[in-house]
Image 1 (cartoon, rainbow, N blue to C red):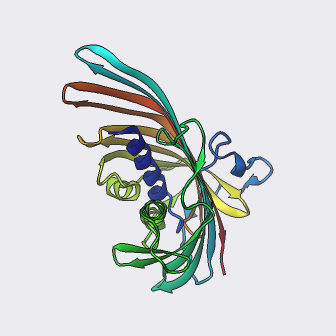
Image 2: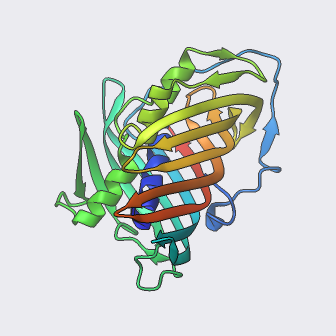
Length: 304
């Protein structure tokens, strides 16, 4: 698998796993980092936690900041000799603002999405070590859920460029759909120390690995109840392990914290990190890639 496509797959995974209907470490998202101590305080941890959902209304808004950093070391061998030994650093930062314009049967159907920030550092850039603006930065788009399709136009109703379309689609793929993790949590009653084993079919669909491979494990252990940005949240320790397909032999083992608002089931913030590996053989050439992945998301909701 090409390195850039490998990185793109991980970006899609983050967008799907933590949708806006629903992470931030300083090295990944320096402009959005928030120190936790002054703004987060523990709340009572003696009760059973029962999650709820909140109806979506026209005018609801969310600002979501997403970041990813990936360092890769690739060794290519041919005829028993090392043909290439290289290191690559990739980074992506995105801030998007979503305003709901239309609601059908309790689900957002139409929205305006804007991208105040969209930057990427990639081997395909003219200067791979420099972070550059993506085509959507500073622009707004109109998106509409129509069955399984997501219709996308620019702010004037015209068809955007193919690159813009792909970026918007990858970041908003789950818009207008039910949040499977939130629906799963609705059926749970948990206490501090309990571990939820998220069904693999839910995890696979959420993360986009139903097309790439299998999710071996997705567990959420409730660590504490904590107020985050004025919202009462359940703070989970998450473990996600995946194994790729023959075409995409990607393996990820990521752990970290996930804060989910109790009253809505929305993911407020999350940070996941861990090793990634990929080994493959193509026409007698051996590819061995390993690295470290960091993903972070923060969401700020303003409801009617």
